[in-house]
Length: 202
Image (cartoon, rainbow, N blue to C red; front, side, top):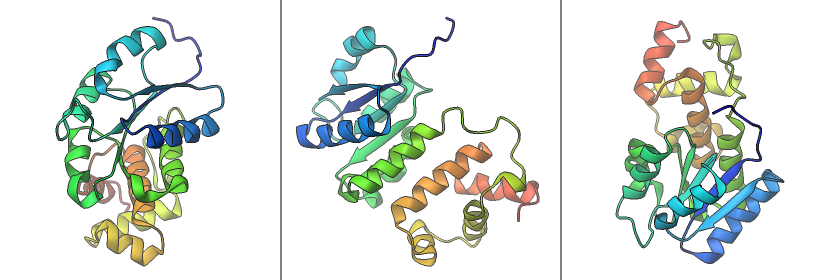
């Protein structure tokens, strides 16, 4: 398969029509020309992919008629391991975020976050394709904010505490952390601290 440039194919899977429309509008505004596919359950994915192609981004509602717990996340990640996966959920992050991230989601977004927060999170996900240097990251490539985060992780602060200290929303902290993990090629806070220590960032 030789890669041909194509408009991004973005999938929004949510059984709540209003929420789905809102996310679709956000994505269209962010990526004019993108092919945004709407589904109300995971079951329609097979046919949709045959028709429209594999996803460049999946926005997945956690509670769908044909999923239980994080089954939808597992299924999407198994089938499309390279597609960034955002979970949009009505459940508070405290309830389900850990399980979703462990199941393979890249980011967890509470539906109550509001359009701007959701937009920022999705933008962060979309802008990571290709915009990360392939080189091993060095101290100078990390933003000031990312260096701050490493120090705060080392102090053992929770997302909530980091948010309070930096005067930003907890959700924004998650997006920053997510980008930091991607940048360093790590999956967790523990790995971040280990990386930082072994690469002289702490």
